[in-house]
Length: 174
Image 1 (cartoon, rainbow, N blue to C red):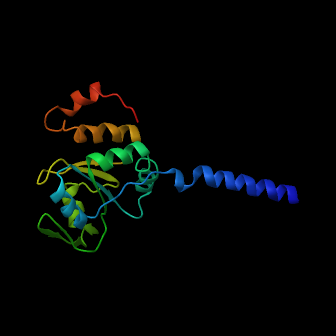
Image 2 (tube, rainbow, N blue to C red; image 1 turned 135 degrees about the vertical axis):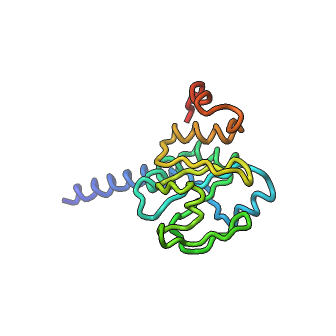
Image 3 (spheres, rainbow, N blue to C red; image 1 turned 180 degrees about the horizontal axis):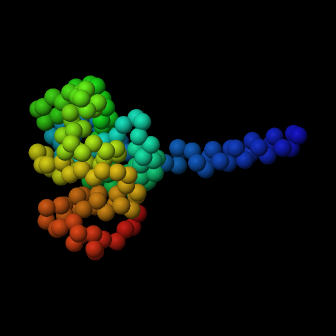
């Protein structure tokens, strides 16, 4: 019996250590209020992770895609990354506008604006430059799919190279 307990604890410890969050990288998420100060220092595209607390695929994307070290490193050097709960009831001030909770849609008006009214979760929104139209990509993005989209915007190809042309020549490295 004692030997069985010892093996159980050793096995549990190995599982915990191999799967624990210490092995995962973390994105340094900003709020929209933090974003204005960051943009004043340096211009970069903005990536917004639009999520909800109840969304299962949002949680998968957070634990798989947004914890991948290559994704984290790329976001930290090429983008301002903002995490936005679509259902927040708090007013959000961004680019001189106040966005409020919309009871009819059960989400914040900023989520409606960012997703162009196509509320789906998760949605990855890229804002290529200040004042530019948000580009919303609905649904879960695996790391390899996320890489192509992030690099399309992060390398300044958006608006210069059609996405289908970029996609044909793209080789995933993550």
